[in-house]
Amino acid sequence: MKTTKISPEQLDKIKEFALDLDWNRAFGGKSKGNRHLFRVVSLVKKIIEEERFFQEIDPSIIEAGAWLHDSGLAVDIQGAALCNEENVKYFLTYIGIKEEDIALILGCIESHDGRSGALSKEAQVVHDADTLEKLGPLGIVRETWKRSQMGWNTEKIVTHLPGHLEKRKNNLYTLPAKERAEKLMLPLKEFFFSLQEQLKEE
Image (cartoon, rainbow, N blue to C red; front, side, top):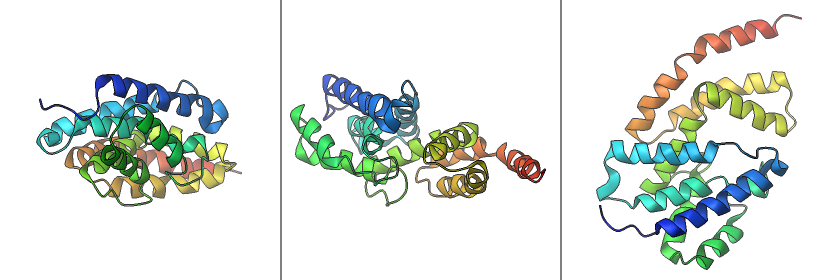
């Protein structure tokens, strides 16, 4: 395998930095201990392997982007993905990441939630892994928890969920992610029907 741009030691530091932001600062520390970042990192590795991207892109850039993709939540849970950009850039520069690689990592962060298009293959992989982790039954739990932290009531969340999940599924870039998404979403049609019927009971 070719030499990666980011060393294992640097990736360990990035992981530690990202977990501090995610567990201790995002949502005021309420999400401490959640395994979202770990699952996204695992998914990017699977997508890379299945897409055979190793000849075209550096997997260490993608892994760094996967660890850091939610770094903006430490500043504002409703803000732009890059609202913590200066802090992230300072940290990456401090640990010796090159400027051009920082730009690729920031691209992964910026487009991970689909609010802007993924302009590189690295960003596409991070976007798809994050989306997969937020689809299916786990996606319902995560999105419900997040929206409740933003003050949404039950009815508003239930109305939001089906369209939100379907939109994210339809915006995937890679074939492995699209195939996984179909399997994850398959059981939800009956669930949402039952949920709507239950809400009608007053």
